[in-house]
Length: 183
Image 1 (tube, one colour):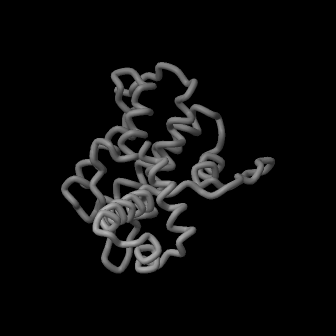
Image 2: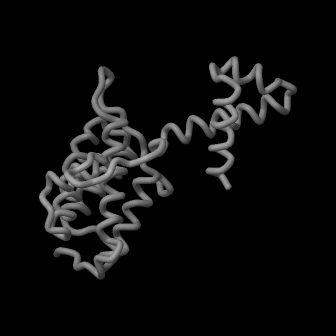
């Protein structure tokens, strides 16, 4: 039974955000020499949060039909660390794109371009630094924690930054980003 929609106000934006998170997960865990690297998707993971934001727009707070099946399969395989989890990501992404295309009336190609942040005709270029990925945020937070411990042990910031391969100004910006993020 297909889930009915409650409203479309923020639904399209929520679907786009979910698609972007899934696409980023796919890029970060794409096949390599070691195979598809699987990261568990726990309750607070950005993809999980994005999925919950989408679910609120459907009755019974569930994703529609095939999208729900793909999402559950990906969660199950990520928790079991199964290597063929990659087979779940692409179908899920295709289902999200199809849903967005149905709601907006746009082509799947246009939806794909927007998910990849590629400009389509008539769109302005995005300004500023691109948003940090989840993995980058986690690595920077871990470095900030290391710095707190080193600082408590009497290590100077200049020495710590140099040891980690950062110029002092870049290290200060990194710490500032992490502290602002955790506020």
